[in-house]
Image (cartoon, rainbow, N blue to C red; front, side, top):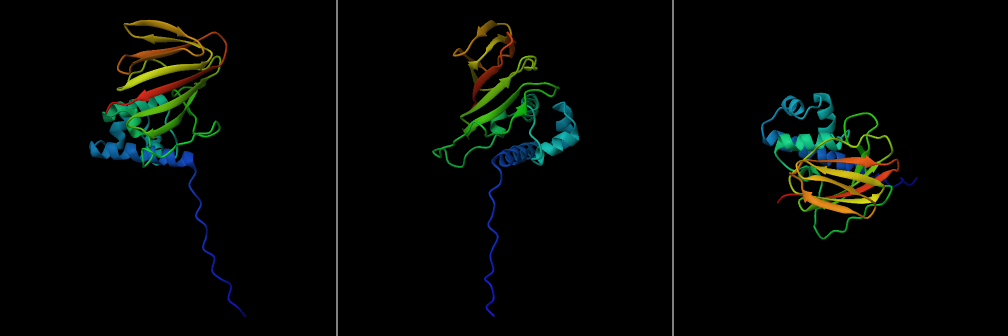
Length: 203
């Protein structure tokens, strides 16, 4: 009788969304340990629970945008520095309409959502898409390092920049400003809103 050949299992590529979560969690953990911060201390300063931070660092869940910004601020780095980058800058990164992990904008019920469309080189820039349905929470004042460009794909919003003014934007309109200026978005009208945010991190 002929012994059947041994068939080695074919490795299955990890899910892309899972890889993003694992890479983000690893980056947060490495930055935290490099700064000699305990998980409890980081969680307290970032205003999240320690168990929730643990699931983020283990790649089991994605933080909301608000939580990510608070974590990055405590760590003293830009949010984009925590996002995974492609190994080679010249590598093409394709993002399909149904790809990407959607995460809430804020840690509240009925919040709008966002996803990272591209972070081919997170040190240079990231592109994020936001979707806010009528009645959903759009977030509060926030700030970051680097520069922001807000492009409205659909719907209407008001962009408020503390101490500078307010601007109403419709589809096709864009506004750019330093991330250090505290800013807030609010929905105008009852139509769904889609926004592209281009974040150019500091070098």
